[in-house]
Length: 318
Image (cartoon, rainbow, N blue to C red):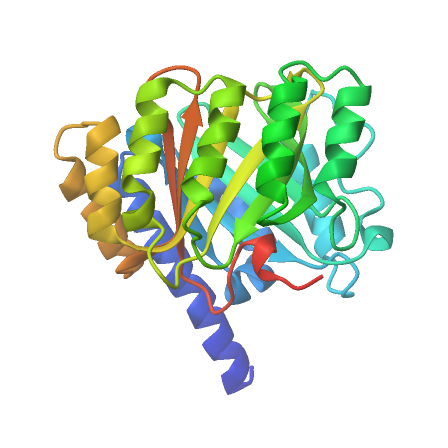
């Protein structure tokens, strides 16, 4: 075995150990996720992120790979998808056509008390397609939750931020199989009128007034200079979700804790989030997303990159 291989194996093992420590710190048994760690070891060696969400009752690892790179990634992913969905609906295979699709896909392996889930996210077309096209498709299909007012607010924001309908995901978990499309609006630098435009989208989709006020009030602090910001909306066969996920990048842990305790005052939350960050050896979140919605409180999720490459598809130039 060459020294480079030893180094690669050691790096992957060290990151897996850190993930295990983080999962254990919130009371989860990592054994169900070990097959995924083994199957996706080549991808995790390069790209390894960890995500936790509201309630700290679940944890996920995130990586990405290219099914057309000759490494067998697509086949390994298909086997994992089938294993998680054993006895359920796995036809047609979620990974069919990925080689022909081209480009990287993001993979999220989730773990909670109910078991393991796997989500595959790929760009809907190389480079995405326009927001106007996506909205036209949704309106033409009678998409529930998408009024002409909401579409107008989205187009107003889209005229000023970079836009794309750039991700289609297929998910399998113990509860069944789900498909969604996400379209994302991004600003590389926060703009003065960004809060107003995003708040208009939230209002059109029925996000509660307290959440909208909080977003406008804190926009300038969390969307600090040099930190990219994006807004994500999700559509499924049932319609458009009445939720706007606002993602902030490169957020210090102390800022994450401040926001989290505002909406999710778990006992000793700062200590618990600090234990996760300490286990992962990180000082800031690669991404911190607040899921503003029509019910209280908003949802929260935070992603820590511990690999050499970023985990987000948005970080990749098509």
